[in-house]
Image (cartoon, rainbow, N blue to C red; front, side):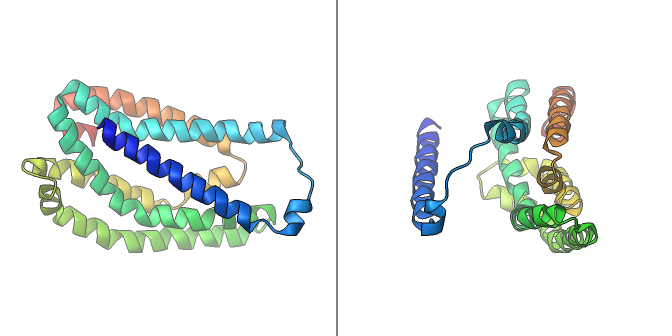
Amino acid sequence: APAAMAITLAAISAALAFTTVVLRRSNTAEMAATASKIEIGAWLAVSLPLVLLGGFHMILSQTDILLVGLLLDTDHAGVYAAASRLSLLVALGLFAVNTIAAPIIAELWAADERQRLQRLLTVSARALLIATLPLALGLALAGGFALRLFGEGFDQARGALQILIAGQLVSAASGVVGSVMTMTGLERQAARIMGVVMVLNILLNAVLIPQLGIAGAA
């Protein structure tokens, strides 16, 4: 595990360095000649809630695996982690649409184009559901086979995988709600909601894992 973490850190650092070089080279003469304007107060007011939001989300995404290892054992944690990662395949469409939709949401909000914004959110949520549903059903049906690719005994997480897939499907059907909040000045409310969800998730894991095993974590 330490070697894998070191390699991951090296890969992220290399990607960051490459991106920085490309960004600097893309600066036009007009951009370079423009005087910098720094508004620390305004940036901190926006960035701190976003940092909290990202931190809460990171904790939320790892809590179930850590608590499975703590309350059961590391074997169950490994099996559950495989199911958890597999279920993220269902969320690929949501990740992609979020990336595309976020700047459009900000633009329409700033231009006070509420009807166009509502249309964008409605169409994207419906399209996500239509695109995600076949993938979710296919993965739920082939979950045992997919888990066995990780090794012997991993297919015991099939029930947990199906529960996680259902959750991802509900998330996709809800649309890009996170981007709506962070792109329309509601990042503080989003951070508070994520904080409450994180605490609730920890409590429910602590109660359900001892009773239901990895299905409780899911």
